[in-house]
Image (cartoon, rainbow, N blue to C red; front, side, top):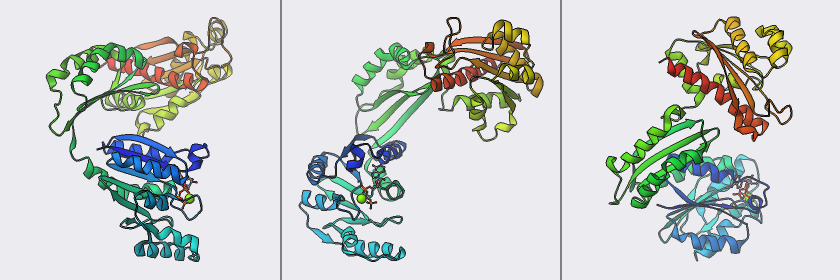
Length: 423
Ligand code: ATP
Ligand code: MG
């Protein structure tokens, strides 16, 4: 099964619009486990459309979007007819659909609008319930071509209705046998890959079709996915073939492993707190409430999260969290002592089981030799006392946004490790 996603339109090539159709369709096909071999974007010029359609005969399924409308730059259908050597004919079913859509809008069926009903002879009409241009399905040689309109609100429902069932049928010779996933935080993908690359290369060589291993950055986490597929009578790796890779992965994981089910770090922390019947409060400085935001993104977080304070200025750290002026003056706002005092302050303010605090230098300004950009102090207070943890986020190389996001994750991860140590 090989799939080509084809996007037609000058406005994609010159950057006027983002090719979100291809991204969306790729995502849909991924969830159906149908691999996309290629995504192509081409101009509206008939010679380019023609050349691409003829080359596309090597794919099993081609889904093209754009260029079905009534204007002079919409030439996909007429060019497909010419490329496939089919006459362009007025399709009666298409005409009645087009007429109905214009009637609904109280618009006249002009000559240029009638153009929408001209399709290559033998094409199957695909109804567009949102817009005026119908889609078309054409089987040419061993390739199924599906033509959909460009506007996403028309293309998406038509894809779901007409492409999904075909894609499912066409890929029925391919079956997922096993899938394992690991979500990691705390190391770069090159470090992780280096440790396991010999085993992966060996399996890829031995089982080029039925073994797939992916390392994807899901910033700031890393996802590992191992899949084995049954494709016809091709050899599949057995548990014995995979053993050495799995052992290597497991030995590398340690505390890096967040989830084997692709849960987010926030979900993992939330579940750990729930399991322990514990509550949480927050005291955030550099992250400005971001920890609170990602925790409250999870439905049901009110069972666990009691509240938080965004204490940005020293006066707020002093007044709301009771951090002593001596610590703030003597050690500074970004110090282990301050972060720890902030966590203790939140703990007593909210009377939660745990309290998490963050204070750091997110940049781009504000760094010093002793406290460069990326410096982060995490404070954690809980039933067995409080402590602070120092990090140098992305070794000072991150943008403000990246530094803040990684800080959120480092803080949640510190809490995760504390909770898991108490298991
Ligand atoms: P219409 O009948 O609206 O003209 P059409 O099938 O002719 O539809 P185009 O003229 O190619 O489609 O594109 C119309 C609009 O659809 C574009 O201006 C753009 O907003 C959107 N569009 C087209 N292609 C894509 C794409 N690949 N990704 C996202 N949006 C797209
Ligand atoms: Mg158009």
